[in-house]
Amino acid sequence: VDPMNQKIGLIIGATGGLGKALTENLLSKEAFSHVYGAARRPEALPSHAKLTPIQIDLEDEDSIAQAAQFIRERHPRLHLLITTVGFLHDTDMTPEKRLDDLDPEQLARSFRVNAIGPALIFKHFHHLLRHPEPSVMASISARVGSIEDNLLGGWYGYRASKAALNQIVRTAAVEMRRKAPKCAIVALHPGTVNTPLSEPFQRNVPEGKLFTPERSAAYLLDVIEGLSEDDTGKFYAWDGQPIPW
Ligand SMILES: NC(=O)c1ccc[n+]([C@@H]2O[C@H](COP(=O)([O-])OP(=O)(O)OC[C@H]3O[C@@H](n4cnc5c(N)ncnc54)[C@H](OP(=O)(O)O)[C@@H]3O)[C@@H](O)[C@H]2O)c1
Image (cartoon, rainbow, N blue to C red; front, side):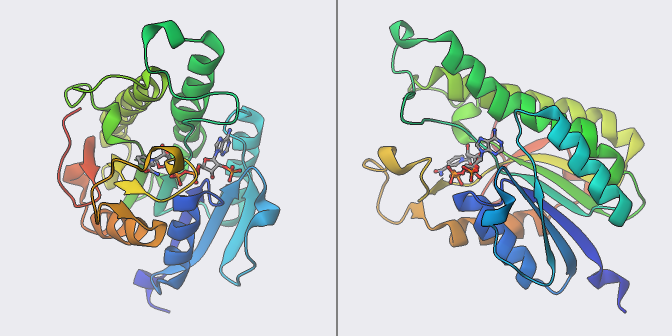
């Protein structure tokens, strides 16, 4: 068996638009011998010889701890962990346009799903990436989380929670540089992707700039494949271009 073809991957949010496409793409790669797909409803995942569905709700730390334990007992070394989970809107909550729209519960929900959950993923999974083989921990962020890039305003909770995620990614990268020198920890912007998350906001997307989930997943996995440990602590777009924090 070629040791290069023994990589283990974990996609968190594997039933989402982008998460599903990332999972399918990883399953098709020979280099990955096994893939874990984590979701709130893992029973919705397809059955595949290389895929193990596991339950994770990012708002429930116990589910994260139990999933980490489950994987550690089977595969103590992970080579790729991607957290794709994100919250922008649901039937009761639409992104805030102005200060008058701010609602503490909506802000808290954004932070719980977009920042605190991914931070707890780092907490419970970082041990599985502390090994001498090259590895990547990627968190799907969003360009609108960039403070420097914010010229349009709006979407307070989503922007602020993605900015918080970015800071957590950067802080984890600084800590892990010593503990796991072969691990690159990055934030990624997937482009504008045709999923339920972006569906109400697609009107102003320029022609050709609304990606299918499959296309965005392929771009992101190309970026990930090109990363080395020197790229840790950075924020990249789907085309490999760095984004200012
Ligand atoms: N689409 C875009 O244009 C765009 C642009 C920039 C950034 N992003 C980012 O890309 C990522 C993927 O989004 P998407 O476009 O694929 O959206 P999506 O199809 O709505 O997927 C969102 C995912 O988040 C999961 N999720 C939400 N709350 C959760 C929780 N408490 N615990 C576990 N999972 C939870 C959903 O789980 P269920 O399947 O169980 O509902 C789903 O898997 C997000 O981080 C998003 O912010 C997207």
